Length: 347
Image (cartoon, rainbow, N blue to C red; front, side, top):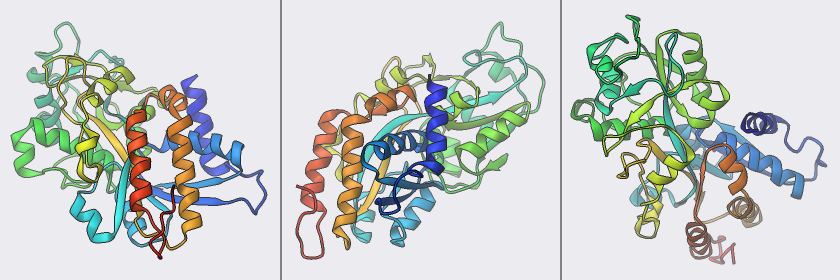
């Protein structure tokens, strides 16, 4: 069922609204590939009900931020939240739309999903180039009884400015002092090893093609591409699987009420079952809407998604925003988003 929904969503990205009259409204957005499957499904469903078409370019969070700053789209989407001072500098507001997991995936002959355990330090050392063989004793020590080959590890990372990378490197910065001191947390870093793929789909394609490879993708891409996800050590020391329930566990402690500008990072959260590389994806809008009618159409779509999109999100293994958070966001729209005359565009 998940595969069917995902496939329909992917086709909807290019075909949604094709049977709607040319006079129908179009909303334009660009950015993160992390939420692309669920945004596409929501857009498909919303189009059938309203005739409004969503044109969303999944070009990576860096591209989405650039396009909203350049005012070439109605909204930007980023998995790397902007801090309050950055939002103020550019006259933007942001709000969380969906949560999900970033998942290390491997292509090692004979290894299936959920068989390989990686400690936090070992994952960091692989991406630092400190561990180069799958039968390295540091990996085999955590995997007794699992036959690991002497195959070279091919590291795959994102080639574009990416919120998925921001979430992934945020986690590595928290679990590895070497990573924190040399590479840090950013949408793009100076990778010491590996191949770069464009978008989650590019990383998935490389990993599927190359035996001995490891990459990181949003969970829906791992499912759709039949990829072998790993069991990853969390803050509690437990090896956990990437599941919607474990993403929810990581998100449970998020205090959105006190998050200034809705800035929130969900990596390496406490909890026995928490998936350690969980993140939220955000929408960026200008506080002053020069075309308030178009701005309201954007808000109507996201309001509908908050109210009606949970079922589709859960089927794609995302975590919907809690109703209390959605209500909080709508209240912020009413206070912050205005036309050029200072009138609220959402009431």
